[in-house]
Length: 301
Image 1 (tube, one colour):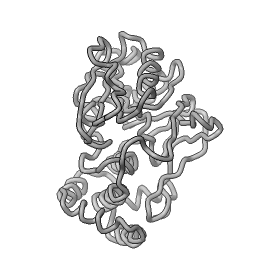
Image 2 (cartoon, rainbow, N blue to C red):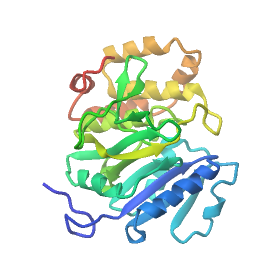
Image 3 (spheres, rainbow, N blue to C red):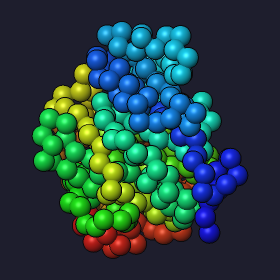
């Protein structure tokens, strides 16, 4: 079966909504917006920038822009900000992008083609470092009970499945976003958002594909341009475990994360959420369990 887009023809070009999340990005945001303006036809794109509490005025140049919708929010965090932007979009495909990426000409066609298969929930390109171009990754693995993410090497020339897609440049059909709700709004700040979404999509029965014929540049930073808390990272890993994993795996993750000083704060953050009700919902709708996911990709946790 081949999916059609809103223009009604399976082979025609779909409208792409680009949702860019930005906070204190400086000149990077303008460069990223310019890159999308250059690489997407004006008739087939929608640009949405969510300025999530910037204090550097980096998004001000978009005030009144005819081709870009600027949304202001106040520290929603990655998951909620991405969902906020997507909720205001209208394209057949929603692409979530960081505010510091560079896409090549023609990037959208291979990604849109991969998404024509209804079994595919989301796709992403290969990613390389803008400052160290030899550093390249094609999807990610989850490593150990601490749930670290590690880049994968390229494994083929055509789209193929990977356990985790990078949210720096991740596309899905609009209907998939509507059905799944996109990113888990219970996640805090940054860290682990892409791991949770990817794991959840696999458990729901969607495939996630990396499209190796497209490679996008990304600015990797050792320190984000705004304050972050490690307790939020711990919280997000704990939430992912408690929502999606069985008791024995949750126990291993709890033991592994206890080494962090911010572990008590992360636990406290998680307990004051809907984690148990979300776990019950997931148990009722998923097609596979966490053991299946970890076996499929030979991951150890």
